[in-house]
Image (cartoon, rainbow, N blue to C red; front, side):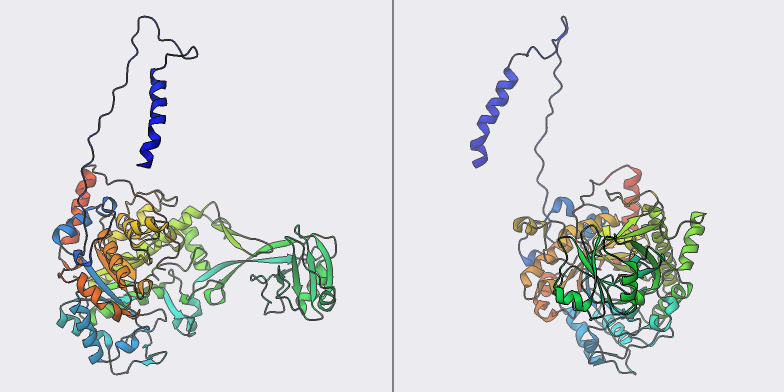
Amino acid sequence: MRALTTCPVSVALVLLALQAPVSAQQPAVPTGTKESTPPLLQLAPPSPREGYVPFPALGPVELDEANNGIGIAQEIARKQQVQGRILWIDAVANLGRINSAEKVKALVERIASVGFNTIVLDVKPIVGETLYPSQHAKRLTRWNQATLPAEFDPVAAMAEACQAAGIGLFASMNTFAEGHRGVSRGLAYERADWQTVVCEAQLCVVDPKSGTRLLINPRPNVRAEALDELTVYTRTDVLAPTDDAAVVLLDASRKVISVTSGAAFTLAGLSPPSGGALLVGEGQAGTFLRRATSPGQVLQLQTATRFVPILQSRIPGVPVWVNPHHPEVQQRLLEMITELLTRYPLDGVVFDDRLRYAAINADFSESTRQAFEEWMGRAIAWPDDVLRCHVSFPGMVVRWIPGPHMDAWLAWRALHLRNWLARAVATARAARPNATVGAYVGSWYGDYPALGANWAADDFQAGFRFLTDTFRPTGFAGLLDWIAPGCYYGMPTIADAAQRGYSPGATVEAAGQLANRAANSQAWVYAGIALEKYDRNPDGLARALQAAAASTQGVMVFDLSHRIDQFWPVFRKAFAKPAQAPHAVPGLLAEVRRQQTERKAARIIDPPVIIQNGLSGTGL
């Protein structure tokens, strides 16, 4: 009502303006002509959209049905009343819960009793060891305090229990990860030649007299462990130089103010001016620094590029990534797919988030360079034609700058992964003709050009800069039966975010919407939710389930280990009405794709994709 009290003034002004005579400055209407009035637009009020709540038993919830209900996959799944209800079981986090036949049987019965229709069992975790006896990998026998008896096969026990309970079972593989940094083991530790090669940049000081260089520790305010690296400090409270260290005081323009020993610096109590820094060298680094610097001189810096195996790199995280281009890496994975599907009565296989590259600056091995140049048809300046690096001083912030062939590089990497996946799917179907193949991905699609995995449909149209006519066809959704994006947010719905003043993109619902549109009815989509985001918040989990199953064709719950016992009543209530998983209905996905093709041929176009920016790294 407040808005209505302010309207009459502006309306009156508008009416006066409309009734005012034509001013002298306006062009006169020529004599003998009649000024025409453009036709006025008439619109009928919009019809209210019928709401859709996937789990009425969980209570009312405000959902964005206008954007949730888009696509043939959504229409058919709702009409057929099918819904994916997947529970993920991580291998190492749950080893103590699946290390006997009795435990597995009781667990599967519990999962089935609350209404889940599918289990994903992580059989090849990040470490690269397997839950089952494999000809291609070491057996996982222990993790922390949990052990797996040598004579017990949890995959066989899980398959038997799932068949008895009438629910599906998929084996998940961490694709291009073959080691765990937390325990320093895995095949990548033994096969260093398999490790992905990382392009790294490091700032160095140049001796203007000799041209020699010395690296600066990439971590400012952290003392270099090696005596052949310098350290930059912007804080004196963490600086404790040895007496014979060389300490160079710099102003904001990198001009050398003084060069002293550590002892003299400590006695003088100096500190850098605003924007300035201290450069410290000990041992041979100190000798270099005294030789390369003098008061009044501007410090000379260069960026050095190096190519190192991932275990020698600064890429963070637990996985030890291997090179997706290495033929032995590829072939071993294909043989493991065959091994799983011929040995166990599985419904299919799932490729975990490690179906990608480690980062934008991997893989930069020599073999990868040669393959890329062969595809390009010419030699290039490596790596600068793809990307180059700028490192700030004294902050040491790394920024990658695209080179002239960056778009080609992104498309080529995505093409390679897409084609390997095509081989993997063919391998799975050769081993078991009715096998279903799925993939887990991070939910923020904008992350994936850098990671080389284009999990969208090959005809996905949206306003992403990287989605060029070359990159778009590398989309691999059409190779899969289903995709589970990790919509791992603690905010369930777009309405929740609006009410609390948060970004709508950082919600389960918005992430599910984008994933559903990206897959474009080429694969089923089951939005993933992380139980840890709703610890001690069953009502929040209930809303997250609603958001996930409204924006996609089901839900994937991660993970059994995340204090799930508090949530069994929520699942039982949500899933009280049984539902078959869409991927388990023979021919249903083919029908979705057929109708989607007909719609395209008839030029029936879905509404534009609304890109609600998600948070980078979500679900990775």
